[in-house]
Amino acid sequence: MKSGPKKSGWLVVSFYCSLLIIWEALASLRIAPDYLFPSPVEVIHRLIELAQDNLLWPSIKTTLLRMVFGFLLAAAIGLVVGIAMGTNWAINKTLKSLFLGLQMLPTAAWVPLSLLIFGLSDKGFYFVVIMSSTSAVAIATADGILNIPPIYLRAARTLGTPQWAMYGRVIVPASLPNVVTGLKLGWTLGWHGAVSAELIKSSIGLGFLLYMGRELNDAAQVIGIMMLTIVFGLFLDRFLFGIIEAKIRRRWGLTGEEDLSA
Amino acid sequence: MTNDTPQSHGNVSEITLVVDCVAKSFETTSQKTVPALAPVSMEIRKGELVVFVGPSGCGKSTLLNLIAGFIQPTTGRIALDGKEVTAPGRDRLMMFQEHGLFPWLNVLDNVSYGLKRSLRHPKARREKARSFLRMMHLQEYEKANIHELSGGMKQRVALARALAPDPRLLLIDEPFSALDTVVRLELYEELQRIHQQTHKTIIFVTHEMQEAACLGDRIMVFSGSPGSVIHEMRIDLPRPRNYSDPQVQSYAQELIARLKENRT
Image 1 (cartoon, rainbow over the protein chains, first blue to last red):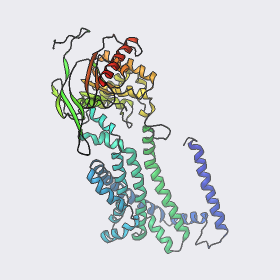
Image 2 (image 1 turned 135 degrees about the vertical axis):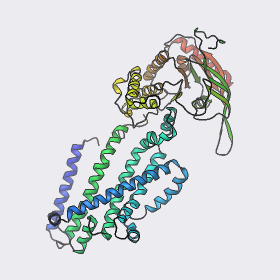
Image 3 (image 1 turned 90 degrees about the vertical axis):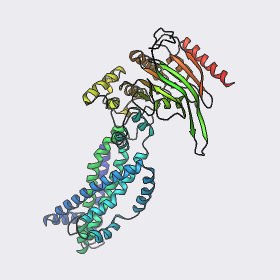
Image 4 (image 1 turned 180 degrees about the vertical axis):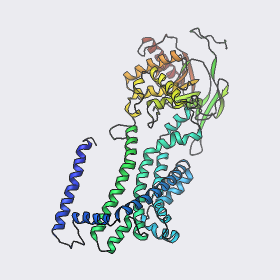
């Protein structure tokens, strides 16, 4: 962190550039046929074709909208359940074991059930996203609340905070660093879930384009869509949560150099 | 106004806090009852700075927590201005050893936190908080984050936060023990100045005899297990007192002697 963002930025950029160069070099050796191992230029070319056929942007938009809506629901449920877990011993003990068990399931494993229950309707996507990400948000929120230093609660009580206001004024803000970490993890898992669901049961979306690429034996499309899935997932992760997280870290002094106990 | 015990520095003020035969025992996990505080009675007058001093485990912090309302006495009764203490409240603000400032709020918002009930408008709250920051010479740091402050500054912010809601009683629990000497000496002066300016009733807990002699109008010496008050001493020295003043030191010596006497 201390070496400065400028330097590390260059390091990352040159890493990806060399990765592309190696890829292009390997592809130009033509060890495998181009429909199995396309070069980066071919991948980009295919993506441009998809865009020209008006398939790309509607798919990206659909996946993002499904994801944002499903994730908002998941985050709201996760926060409420997490607060209940963090403030009630019995709820935490029981639900935490359930959630940890559910996290053993790959997110795609929710898709068959969602098909059975919701058929091909959009509700199925929200179901998969919610099942994928709620537990991560809830567990992180509960842990955040349970790890609040007792002195904050004592200080708030001596300063006359009424019991009903404790949640808004102390419990939620004090657990915020953990909550944001949970939201980030939840976003990632929900994104997995959304794309997995589209692989199986959609006629539009990034997951559908992946599936279509496989049907057409088109590795360039498969790789291109995989890359877009990473880029859009990361983009929102960085911009949505990255900014909030950086702000919290700056305010709390969690940048790693300062000692909290001092 | 009660006039029964004239105080040596002339001004007689009314009793504000009454501790009446208060004892506390804790239940351990093995269902055993461990007495922490033997029955203690005391009266504290308005504007007094009383110091509870004694070795660790002598019940002084237990009594402070009882007065704050964080725990309930097993027997006996505590009343502030005639009103029985049953829960924590802003009339008995506590200041902690580990400052307890909220890291999600900046300095100014920390100080104005306790004003939510008394002042409706955020602007009025901020103005009042600013006046307390000025009192602590911290007005330039109102926008600072807590982690950016030094240990001594954090305790001064904590003191400002505790004073701002104008509590009737300020409870201070070993606030300076984690600070280095120079900062501590500054804070002794600061606390005495604040006490003289605001005439707050203060209970200050420490295990350090010289700190007790430097700060207290009256010292309660705690000892034993279960703890109890073994000695009470009035310190008649003019203020502001200097920590290394020979007279302060001789009072401290006397406190140590009393403690040793009690142990043998």
